[in-house]
Image 1 (cartoon, rainbow over the protein chains, first blue to last red):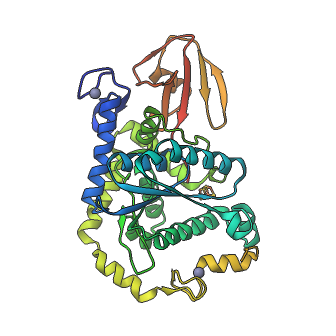
Image 2 (image 1 turned 120 degrees about the vertical axis):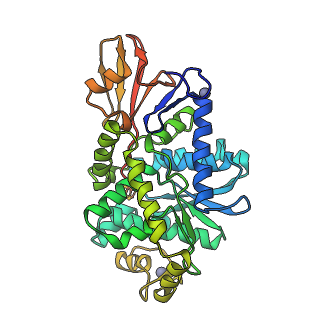
Image 3 (image 1 turned 90 degrees about the vertical axis):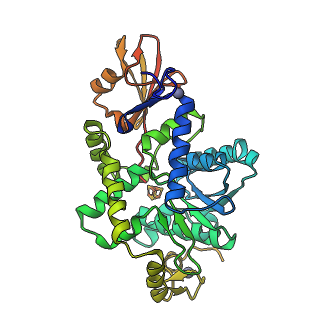
Length: 311
Length: 64
Ligand code: SF4
Ligand SMILES: [Zn+2]
Ligand SMILES: [Zn+2]
């Protein structure tokens, strides 16, 4: 297989684009797709300060790498969840990337260790408050990212969600007709009230396989093992089904998700009306002053129930 | 040739020569969910693999 652009030996075939690329042309393709996503969804500009949520996995490290190479001002935050060997290894990968690559671009890494603030790791906290580990984890990660973004005055928060993540999530939402979640599936969510940072997903045009290839080709050392809690998750099942369809009919995932975005953009309430909606229901948490719909935000409630937090 | 697989980590022995595409099909693995790495290099589905090659088939799907 030869590169569609320069005719040298290809390293990856991309059936959904009817193309194959050598390393250089593939890097160009990936950077182009991200640049296009940033521009078409008005994500951020060259002056904006970006906070990337990194986990040590391929997507978030690739995102940090791409943004720095495209010349953006991107720092990162890693949340250590305290899940045994998985957290230790992913933490080490993130630190290594920050020192070996990001530092030379003048970018810095923020660290948050759940155990330090909450007095226990994610699994233990989840048991104490009788909630699934992943939902406890989600609440904590969302809270900490937003907190760092606001406190350190970042203009926007970027996550490594890719085409597969978004297509699988859309499939889940549609299968259960969770229409109220559909509005939140846009790759660019405005800062809704003072106290909520703007959130973007610059990788929504790239598949998981393309991002893994980018990491391998550019020698980005990421954690291949999964978080042990992800085993058997619904998301994994949806992704498997979609990848079977994709292999039979290339382009299925993008037609599904991008087609949805296209429809949404024609009928979606504009950013301002969404912000207005939020402003009507959100106010500062009485305990930590981050925005919430209740008296006390879900993070503070969780910490109170667990009773392990160090003050 | 030695094939290294993940989730769970294990090694299988497969007789070469064999095309990447056929190797994946034999192991019942979907192209869209895997990368095939020979030595340090990514290879396309039409690449021929020979006995003695060091091959890793890396899953690319994560559940988070
Ligand atoms: S799988 Fe669950 S516990 Fe693990 S990182 Fe993802 S949300 Fe957190
Ligand atoms: Zn080329
Ligand atoms: Zn609070």
